[in-house]
Image (cartoon, rainbow, N blue to C red; front, side, top):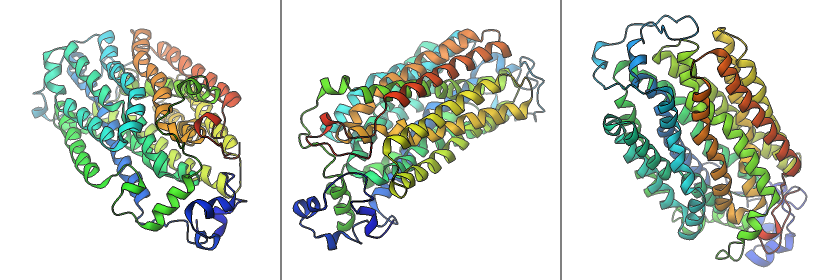
Length: 502
C-alpha cells in the first residue's frame, strides 16, 4: 500500500479534486505522494484496531459464556452428564469428571425459563444502542465504551450470586450486562469514523471486530473446560478478570481521535485527517434525524442486520444446547465443537476485509457492488447450510461440518452490510449503528425464547423448524439489501456529498 497510486484521482474511490488537498492542507501534490500513506507497522490506527479487538473479545466472552455454563447449571443435565441419557443421538464416550467440581449449585429451570435467561441480556442491550451512538458523538467514544464494558465485567462477576438468589435475579443481572454492552458497537463506530481512512475501512474494522468471533471461539471451549475441571462459577470469575485487564489498557492507551493522541506520528495524523476531510460533516452539533430515519439505504442495512442476527443469535445462544440435547456431546466436548463455527467465521471475516479493500482499491470495483456481493454470500450461504444441518440426523461429522460452514460464510458479511454505515454517513456512523443494532437486537431477545418454545420435546424435527425460520429470514434480508443498499455518502450526511463509487 505504498506509492502515488494509492491516493491518485484515478484509484481513490472518493471523488476529491487534487487541488482540494493543496488548498486545505497546505501540502503540495509532491509532498502527499508517495509518502502520504502512513505505514501499518507500529501505527496508532492499527494499534487501536488490536486493542478494540481485545475489547470485543471481552464483550463476546461475557455474552456467550452463559450458554455453556447453562448446560452445567441445570440439575437434570448435571445428573446425567456421564451418560447423556436425555440426548436424541447416542451418547459419546466421556471421561469421568473430577470429583471436586460438584460444589457449585444447580437449578431446576424448565426450558421456558432457560429461554428467558438466555435472551434477557438483549433486553438491556437494546436500550442503549441509539443513546450509545448519540453519547459517543457528544462526549467521545473512549470512556463510553470503556465504562460500558467495565460495568458488564462487574455484573459478570456477580452472576453466581445472582443465580443462587433465583432466576429473576439472574435475569436482572443479565439485563444490566446488556445495558453496559449496548454502547460498545455504536461507540466503536464513532471512533472509527475519526480513525479509519476510507480505503482501509474493511481491513481495520474486520481486525477490530474479529475479537467478537475470537471471544466466542475461545470462551466456548474454555468455558467447557472450566466447567469440567472446576465448576460453572469460575467461568464468570475468569472472564471477568480478563475484562478488568482490558479496561486498564484501554484507559491508558486509547484516544478519541488522531488529533488528541499524544504519541501518533505527524505523518499518520495527516494521512488520516486528510483522507477523511471531505467525508465528515462540518456541523457536528446538528443531527439530521428526519433524514436519517427516512433514509432508504439505512433501512436496507436495518433489514439485513436484523435478518443476519436472527441466525447468528439463534446459534450463539442455543448451539451448546443443541450439541448436548440432540447430538449428545458432553460439557467438555460441547464447548470445543460449539466454537468451531465461530473460528471459521473469524477467519472468513478477516479474509473478506482484505479482499473487499483489494477489490475497491486495486480493481476499482464500486463500493456498493462489493458490499452487496459480500452480503449475499454472507447471508444466503449460512441459510443453505443451516437447513442442511437439520437433515443429517445423528451424523456427527456432517452436523458439525455444516454448522461450521454456515457460520464461516456468515463472516463474509463483515465486509458487506456490517460496515455500510461508514460508507453512507461516516459522520453519524455511531448513531446509524445504534439504530440498526437496536432492530438487530430483537432476534437476540425473542429468538431463544421462540426456539426453546418450539423445541420443548427436543426432537430433530423441532430443531428443523427453528433452522427453517432462521434461513427464511436470512434470505429475505439478503434480497432486501440487494435491492435498496447503497455505497455513497448520502447528501444529508455532509454538506457536499462525495461518492465512493456507487
